[in-house]
Amino acid sequence: MQYALQRYGQLYFVLDVSRSDLLGSVLSGVRTGIISNTLHKPLKVRFYGSGEDGVDHGGVQVELFANIGRKICDPEFGMFTIDNETQRAWIRQGYRDGVDRFEVIGSTVALAVYNGCTINVSFPKIMYMMLLGKKPNRPEDIEDIFPTLAAGLRALLSDDIDVADLGLTFDYTYTSFDGAVTIPMRGRPSPALVDENKREYVGEYIEHLSYVTVAPFFDAFKRGWNKLMPDKLTRLFTPAELMALTQGLETQDYDVDELQRVTQYDDGYSPIHPAIEWFWQVVKSFTAKDRLQLLEFVTACPRVPVVDGISGVTFVIQRNGPDSDRLPTSLTCFGRLLLPEYRNREKMEHMLRTAIEHSKGFGLV
Image (tube, helix red, strand yellow):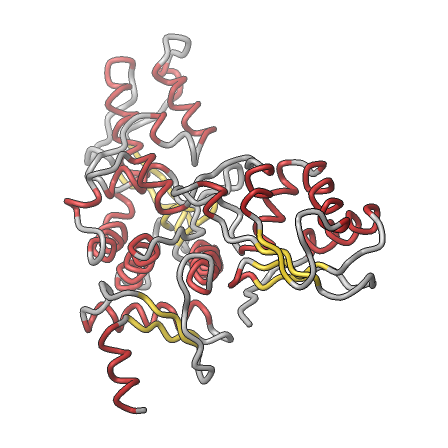
């Protein structure tokens, strides 16, 4: 038995995960993998004391990365901030707990991609531009995370504003843990913004926002990323392709007919069972937001895989007893919806809506 466990560890990168400390245990495991140079081995997820092994796409790994992505970007973790308008995450300016965490985060994100999973982070295009060695310096580069700022900087470049009247100088100000911090973009004294230098001002402002003020942390993130995704591989993609590969397709909806076509059934259900016919009628009446909530409820991730699209999703509907007042539940690590045989379509819709609107969690069982 001991030999088998040792052999198992030699063949795979075994990521031991604690249900009670999901983020901490994952980051600790990835840090160990960096030190031991074992991240490149096929990934297996195992829970403390349970002996569970991770499975391939559609299983524990998919759900793990979906939940880890949320926790990484959670402002309470302190490493990223979330823009209120776009809900995208960017490196916290003024972060001061050291750069080693960012290296581990970079390797964690790359670990998902390396193992064919998407990770539910919400990074903007500039993250992937910079991983490709490109320097963001145009308003359109930051539009997907800071649209209001991008519009303001674009207005500066137009002929509709006399920028000299704004009283701006080549200074960049951001908010850190200690309050506002102002740094000169061109040394002291800072030149005034005038029509002749406004293009340089906009470019340098975006460079400070995206890189200069977070350089040590982004560089650490990239070092971690490169442990599994070296530059020669990363540069095979455009920023948009790399973003989709990492985060999944940020679709506003998906083809329900295609999902219905690939869905499997268990424990007495079939495509022509009345409860299943009601189920699909209800889903097709859902809004796009409702359908994405359903996808997340069953698979843990609201994003469609970039490879194979919705047809690549594992989606199984299993009968969970006769009509009752129990809500539908799910085994997200297996892409399995546990659906009681409700007595009519109206009840089916009520119970399904209630379930998907109020249920969140890491349902590994």
